[in-house]
Image (cartoon, rainbow, N blue to C red; front, side):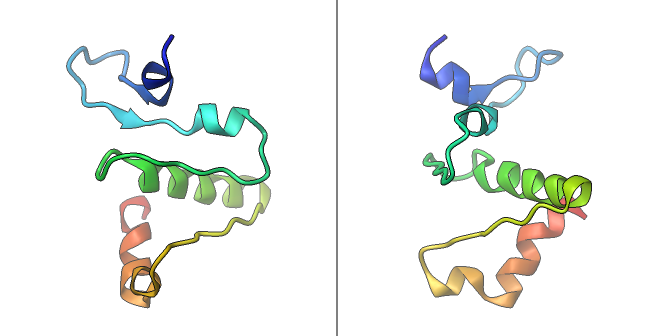
Amino acid sequence: MGIIDKVFKRKKKEKDAPLYYDISDIDATGATYRLAIGGRGIGKTYSVCRKIITNFLENGDRAAYIRRYAEEIQPKNIAMLFDPHI
């Protein structure tokens, strides 16, 4: 299985389902710091936020959300970040 196949996975029930970003391979490395690089709109942020929320609710684990630009961490943008998960 190639790196693209590992990072992007299709939903098994839907043959033509869109690809989404899967962070399980990155998590499997066990690295202290993990970096996801990829195109826009493929689900990197969604996948990571979902994992952060799940880990916090189940185990009380904490995480850091780091962005490059200050504009990306303004309160209005942070609120939109978690909207899909509410």
